[in-house]
Amino acid sequence: MSHMDARLAVETRQLTKTFGRGDNAVQALKGVDFNARCGELIMIVGPSGCGKTTLLSVICGTMKANEGYVNVFGTDMSAMSAGALTKFRGQNVGFIFQQFNLIPTWNILENASVPLLLNGAGKRKAEDEAARLLTEVGLGKRLEAYPNQLSGGQQQRVAIARALVHEPRLLICDEPTASLDAATGRKVLELLKTSACRPDRCVIVVTHDSRIFQFADRIAEMEDGVVKTITEADKYQAHPL
Amino acid sequence: MLRLALKMLYGDVAKFVMLLGGLTFCSLLMTQQSGVFCGLMLWTTSTLRNVRAPIWVCDAKVEQINEVVPLRDVEVSRVRSVEGVDWAVPLYWGMIQARLQNGTFQPIQLTGLDSATMVGRPVKMTAGDIDDLRLPNAVIVDQLALKKFKRKGYDLKVGDTFEINDKEARVVGICHADQSFLGQPYVYTTYERALEYAPRQRKMLSFILVKPKDNVSEAEVVQRIRKIPGLSAYTEAELTNRTIDWYIKYTGIPISFGTVVLLGAIVGIAIAGQTFYLFVHENVRHLAALKAMGASGTLLAEMVFLQAFSVGVAGYGLGTGLTSIFGSIFMKVGEPPFYLPWQVLAFVGAVIVLICLFSASIGLLKVLRAEPAVVFR
Image (cartoon, each protein chain N blue to C red):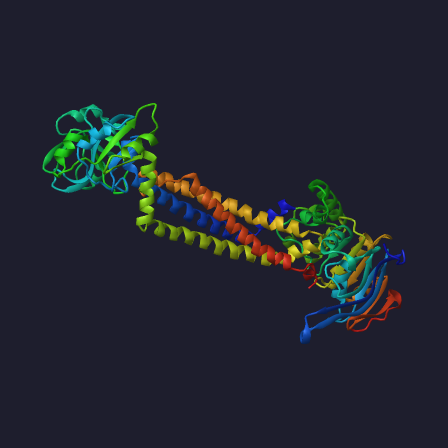
């Protein structure tokens, strides 16, 4: 367990990550210090290529940093094996992807029940819980529908249900509104804010979309592989990204 | 999750059908060709099954059943005098031309049985009586003779006659006999009459059929007969294996069929491997998402192998099922030869397992190499 502030859900110190070698090496993270608190929705913003997604990947344990320290809910992620990271992700992290990543040959009930199945729940229990969440996000009458029968907004709602079905403490959202029109994107964020934000949970959203900044509690601005500022949302001055 | 893994595969109808088709074709090709090969090998030993005797005695130089090196008649007496022999009877067997009443010729396999005992007589008579074989000029023909003669414009039936070596042969019965590799009908008569029909040679005896006494083993009697200079003896099983081995060793048949079986396996590997790889490639993002959500490498491996093996089992079942349908048609028609022993099914099953292992492994490599972070790109 860590010595970090009990209110902190995520803390990184001096994270570095380099892709490639020699002349082709690209340093995506250049000593990132970042933190996210329990109960908040924090957005990571910045221009393309500044390292937002790389930071997100390292925080959720889908990628290992070259150097530095990552602590998520008191667990030192940088010291964990690949197997332990997989298990940790399965139990503690929920994902919402830009491209939804719903499996097209499974109906939405099956898609939404996956995290529980991966955690060893039985089919019935997993589907009951998934049905409850899908109903919460307004898709209760379309449980047997397949992803390609739904609109982009509806698919993202399925992704939200899937991300929350196993009660994760950390919710990772990568450009959740990038594939949606403005109105739908706004609705999705409203839904995310109402259904996902809880005192014991942290929601991290990577986005380019300045129209949704208003839903954040804090905003971390990245540039050229480092977090430049972390500001309360109401004090954040959006720059053109 | 494994149920969902299957749904993932079956849901991609185009690839599933392609995989199933490839494995079915591969399984069908290998099973069917192996079945025809085994049937052909079975045909090479049909004389052994049509005559049936515990021990076959022949010239020491004979390598297989379809090769005759004639013996002197006196050899029968020598064999009878061997300790442990219950009975020994002569058998004539040779290819000879029959001349039909319309003037056409048909090669036949003339089989001359001991007239006293009728040892080696046909097991199943479809018309006439085997005892009538003792009547003057009597012969019994098999069902293939009817077919062959009919093809030459002569509808043969009991009571009809034809000529063998300018001597009359009167059909007194029709029997069922296993078709032979040489492709000619069996015509049964007595040993003495067979010697009259066959062109005269110094030695005329083809084989001696032997039964050991009840308390003596076949192997023991075989060993004793082999001590007689110039003679050799085999149990029925030994001569069957010796004949099949000879055809495998000295003819190009196994190479010909083996090539087709190999092609079937290659086609299976190519189609199944490529399609499955493509299926995994197209789903790598989804599988990586599962990995990000906590699916372990072991679970993903189980999913990929289950997908590969489920389609493998279905393809194998369809392929062997179709082969069985073809086989039953072949067997009703009588040709091409067909025999499907369990070893062929096991062999083809093993090849399908290897193809599935190969396909799943290349797919799995792709999945395991994919970083879960790919889902963010």
